[in-house]
Image (cartoon, rainbow, N blue to C red; front, side, top):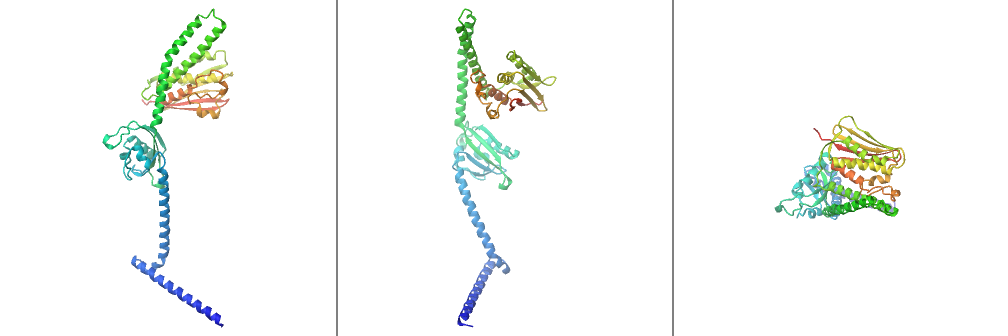
Length: 416
């Protein structure tokens, strides 16, 4: 064996000896740690693995804490107040804007929600969301609170949204609160202006239309130009009067303080009166109105004045928009156990799909090619929707152009 081989063997032996000494040293150290922790000596070999697991768990917890701080910082920058509550409606988390919205010095975690919001409308909505397991949204006007309890938010308007949380995140619900007082006040000012302006315009316009009718009666010796001018004035005067009456109707429906004059009435008779009123529009045309109601009384509790407008607007809308021959307008009713279903349908040109989401908006008129003709005020369907909703019902529109267009209204029936 050469000197080089002897040297290498010697170095290898030294390394193995050093490694063995090191292993023996750390084994004694781990056994000492295990002994101090009350563990058995044979469990000392598992300590390195346990220490690595603890280190990784700590590192993961620090990362989650950092992520939580980032999310909380982001949630503190939004304008809405956000709250997380458990199933007992105790606060688990609240962002900083909530304190500003509710005028509170602090929102304490673990405290019942009602103690901080101080309005049962909010806590009731959250409880409803948890119980029924659905997303809920409501606009509320805050109730007056005790002066000694802090700033009084009575009269301010808020949009409240709540939705349940899954069991994997501990259950409960999230709640978002947004102050919409300014927009609510603006909307109220707009409604007041429309109502007041309509009232102020109705009286002078009635006088103007009266004088136009008087001039028409005495226009036998007038020139054709004068007669044509009076006819045009009468036509547009009546249109303006119709717009004013429609705007007043919408204002009354939007006014929360204006209650409906509800009493039982026969829906079949109401629809028949509307059809008879519009019958002159069908003279000389290949068109008809069909009524399909069950035998006997077709009673519904509501304001007959608005139901006259509902049927008149829906039937008149079908007549005006369908000038081709063969038009059939069908008005039907079905009475179920607790619901009344009313439908007004026709087989006319229909409504394009892109117009369907907008037909109930004010002044919206889908058929732009009719703009040169006076087809209506654009308020009729808006009045229909408001009136149906004021009776606690819903209205849906479906249309297959050239086949069938149907307005379906569902109304709750009062239980005897």
